[in-house]
Length: 351
Ligand code: IPM
Ligand code: MN
Image (cartoon, rainbow, N blue to C red; front, side, top):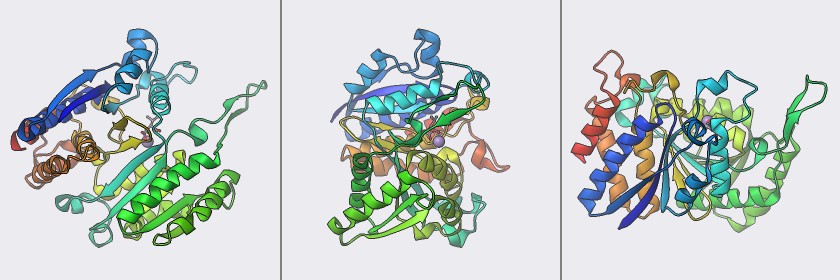
């Protein structure tokens, strides 16, 4: 197969982790006889510095005409510490999600056999966890009306949802649940928020179309507790943009490190694959960040192209590296910590 993949390294550790995913993907291409052409493009703080815009039109064209987008990370402390900044790297990611129509963010949570004891959670609670948080990605409070009032002391962000936005996400959730354990949990705050009541009403109306799926409704605050307490109770979770953002960071504790969690963002023609972690500026340029989340995001990319053996080969080599202790410092726990690039080289060699 011939693949044209847009390569958006972004900021901080983005370029370093992306490099490893490219090495591994090229090794896969070689082994399975595919041809990958990589189309690099600017995004985030790097793009602001170069052209004054975090998601330039040229980058959008590269992404829109690619078969898929592989993305590193976005964000720079220079902007975090400047509340008055008008242009921010994160706006690039939001614009990209919106312009590419990526309304559903698929964030799987699973455990790695050799890492179970790295989690602060008890082995018997987490072993065998296999759930997906399906996060709405182009609506809600991230995209609602926001601003400041004239008094200079009031700021607001609004959480708005339209029925069609909930329906299209829930449809993906139901379809996903059908292929898995047939359990769908809608996570909201319907005891307080009107938009959450629209979520419940919409999902309830869809239940009759999926009689095999067992649907439950839970409040976000309760799930924040239950997810780490009884993660195996969950299969597919559908939730709003901000709730999903928060829950997926929390869920990474189950796997053992933020550096392990991949994701895909889907919705229209071109899908995007990215680790769920941020740009980890403290580690930028040091060759110490864990590249596995990005490497596993590449596995999700291959899977979505129906290249299942390729995806599995990546997962297998990642498991092997973990079992053999070829890990970066976040997982080394006093043992040898390998460099980001060394982990990438090892994975590519062992594909
Ligand atoms: C994520 C990140 C982003 C988000 C930021 C960088 C805008 O935290 O992908 O989870 O909040 O969606
Ligand atoms: Mn996040």
